[in-house]
Image (cartoon, rainbow, N blue to C red):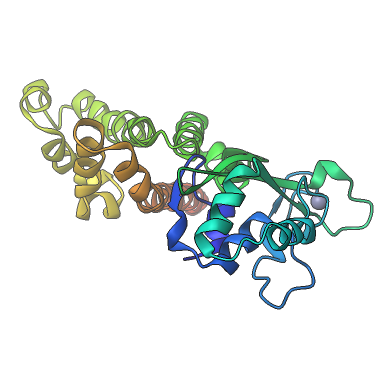
Amino acid sequence: MDLHKIFLSDSLYTKYGINSFSEDELLNILFHNENSDINKIKTLDSYCTVCKKETTFISSDITTINFRETLLQITDRGIDSVDNVFNFLEECGTFERVFKCPRPGSDSNHNHVYVFRIKDKELIKIGQSPSIADLAKKEIEKYRSFDENIYKELNRAIGLSSYGIGVGSYVYLRRIIEKNIVVPILQGLLEKGEIAQDDLFQSDFKKKIDLAKDYLPEFLVSNKKIYSILSKGIHQLEEKECNDSFPLLRTAIEIILDEKIEQQKRDEKNKLIANELNKFK
Ligand SMILES: [Zn+2]
């Protein structure tokens, strides 16, 4: 299992069967464990929202439960089997991991904090600061200057998904395709008389994409399935199924948006050069 992913990108309240981890892996997630050779999570590569820079955060020992004390208690109580270690950890309450920004002068505002608990033989990430949505703001910032509405819808989708609300996140992703990308083009075609009002009433959405295909990002036209998957998610899939596929669909939407931004840049450049050429007599 990718332990870093649990910290960095998995949504809150995702449950992991405790038996899917080795004892070492579980202790690594729950505790700062500096002196151990088994430590797999000494650092996390993420984004510092204070420095506004990509940062390698360093695991810190300012935690609620100390690793050595816990091991001592496990030894003192004569806990020997893995199952009993897991039971003991379940009784411990919450586990906090703190990762510090290493830049000189960084205070606790720069820290990334993660909180876990074990319940019913499952590991659950119950808290995270900064939130996944806050961290994603920087990744999707380029869409804000392209279209403020699209930026807001995408940020809401990421926010909902980060709380495990998979179906709700699909609603916002679908709105980006439908309301912000396809419908405005169809409206334009309707006004120019290139399509008729009846076309819009009769068509299902995939057919609407075909009607507007000459003006839409190529990736959307050749992958109309994106829209069907989002619709299926909203109407038929479970939260978890939606959440599991969210990163894939988010990337697909970002590819479509990137294509639109490229197109806009190309159009602006073409217009500029055409204007300059027209100045020659
Ligand atoms: Zn920082």
